Image (cartoon, rainbow over all chains, first blue to last red):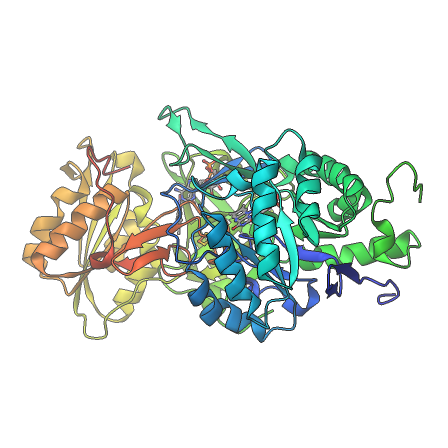
Length: 310
Length: 270
Ligand SMILES: Cc1cc2nc3c(=O)[nH]c(=O)nc-3n(C[C@H](O)[C@H](O)[C@H](O)COP(=O)(O)OP(=O)(O)OC[C@H]3O[C@@H](n4cnc5c(N)ncnc54)[C@H](O)[C@@H]3O)c2cc1C
Ligand SMILES: Cc1cc2nc3c(=O)[nH]c(=O)nc-3n(C[C@H](O)[C@H](O)[C@H](O)COP(=O)(O)O)c2cc1C
Ligand code: FES
C-alpha cells in the first residue's frame, strides 16, 4: 500500500520528503529523541531557539500541566550559537534530515548576528526566526506583536541570509493576518504558527502562581482550535506557505491543519507523552490520503476553503 | 528499538496494586525489558492513562526490580497518582525507561549511610539491595510525618545493619525530622558515602552535615519533568558546573556540586 502517495512538500527552497516537522523546543536537537525515532523519516528537525551567547533561561518551576495542555516558561535556555554549531549541529549534520534552526535574540542586531553565523553552516537547511516567545523580557514576543517591529526584524535577517527564512508568529495578537502580511512583505519565505498562548496557573494551596515567572506559554491540544483558526486566516492572507502547529497529536490533527491551509505541520508537546508521535503522524497522513484517494499530500492544503471544495 | 541498555518505550501490565501506608501505594508492573536493564536510582516515565486528558507522563523511581517486574511506591498527591491508585491487575500502561543517572557505589566503600524522608524511601530499595550484595555495611535513617507513613521499613530492616527511625509527631522512633538522626549517625558510623532522598530542604541539611563531616554525599533531586529525556529543559538543577538536567544528568547528583536554593522554614519530612 505505502509509497503510492506523493508526500513531498515545498517550503521556500526547501524540499521536504513529507510535511511533518518537530516543533522548536520540544525535541531538543533531535539527538534526545533519536533513540525512539528514525529521524530520516521526518520532514525536518526544528531545533530549540539559539541566541548569540548562552542564555540561562528562567527560574523553576518551569512547567505545569493544565487541562489538555501545559504551560512552560523555559525562557529560551540555550548554549549560544557557537556551542550549538559545535555540538548539536555537528551531530545533526550527520543525520539524513533537513535541519531548521530556531533563531532568537534580545535585539535586532542579535537576530542578525545569529542569522549570519548560521548562514555559513551548510548543515542548516532553513532558519525559523522566533519573534514569538512569551517567556523572555526583552526580545521574543515583543517583536512579534507589532507590525513595525516584526517587519524590522525580518527585513534585517533577510539581508543576512539566502537560506529559506521562516518567521514564527505569536498568537497573542488581535490581528494575526496583519502581522503575517507585514513579514511576508519583508521577504519571509514561510510563516510558522502558532507559538504558545500566554497563560497562567495558580496553586490554590500555596496561593501563589505555579510558575516562578507567573505567566507561561500554553501548548498542547487545548490550543488547537485557536491555532487552526489562525492558520486558516493567515494562509488566506498571504502567498507564502504556512507551517501549522499547536496541539497536533495524530494524523487527524495534522490533516485538520493542512485542510485549513498549512503546507507543513509541526508536532510539539505530543512528543513528551509519546516520543514516536512524529512518525505516527507521517504514517497516518499517508494512510489518510490513501483512504481518501488523494495522490499528493499537498492537495490537502487549504482544501477546506469554501472555494476549493475537494 | 534501540541498544540493549538504552531507554525504550515498554508496555507494562499491572500485576498488583495495594496501599502500603497512609496515601502511599505500591504498584507492581510486569515489565521485563525495563526490569532487566534498570540500575538503582534510575527512574521510569509512566503514562498513566491514554487519551488527550493527561498531557504529561509522571516520573517515578523504581523501588525494586526483579523477575521481570518493577515495583513502584507512589504517594497520592494529585490527578495522576489518584488514577494510578485505582489501577487494577491487568491494566496496561506504558513506561519509558530506564532513565537518568542513578546512585553510584564507590568500589572501595565498606560503610554507607542511607537517609530517606517520606517517599524518599522509594529509590532506596534497589540501592540497599545492591549495597547488601556488595557486602557494604549499611545504616538506614528513615523519617516520615507519622508511624502510619513510614514506608518499606521491613525491607530496610532486613538488609541493613541498623535502621533508625524518626517521625515528626513521635508516633514511632525518635521525635523530629530525620535530620536529627544524621549527625550522630555520621559521627558513629563514619560512612564512606551517604545517600539521601526526600524533601529538598532535608536533602540540603544532610548535604551540609556531610560536607562538614567530610563525607561524600549523593542526593536524588525531584523536578517537574515534561520529556524525561533531556529535550525540554523543564527540569534544570543549578550546579557549580552550570545548569544540569535532572532527567539525564541526574536525578542523582554529587551533593557538593548543587547550588542549593536558600530556604527558610523547612518542611523537612513530608
Ligand atoms: C525522578 C523522579 C522520581 C520520582 N519518584 C517518585 C516515587 O518513587 N514515588 C512518588 O510518589 N513520587 C515520585 N516522584 C514525584 C512524582 O513524579 C509526582 O508525585 C507525580 O508526578 C505527581 O503526579 P500527579 O498527577 O498525582 O500530581 P499533579 O499535581 O496532578 O501533577 C501534575 C503534573 O505535575 C507533575 N508533578 C507533580 N509533582 C511532581 C513532582 N514532585 N515531581 C515531578 N513531577 C511532578 C506530574 O508529572 C504532572 O505532570 C518522582 C519525581 C521525579 C522527578
Ligand atoms: C517546553 C517548550 C519549549 C519551547 N521552546 C520554543 C523555542 O525555543 N522556540 C520556539 O519558537 N518555540 C518554542 N516552543 C513552542 C513550540 O515550538 C510550539 O510552537 C508550541 O508548543 C505549540 O505546539 P504544540 O501545542 O504542538 O506544543 C516551545 C514549547 C514548549 C512546550
Ligand atoms: S524533563 Fe525534559 S529536559 Fe528534563
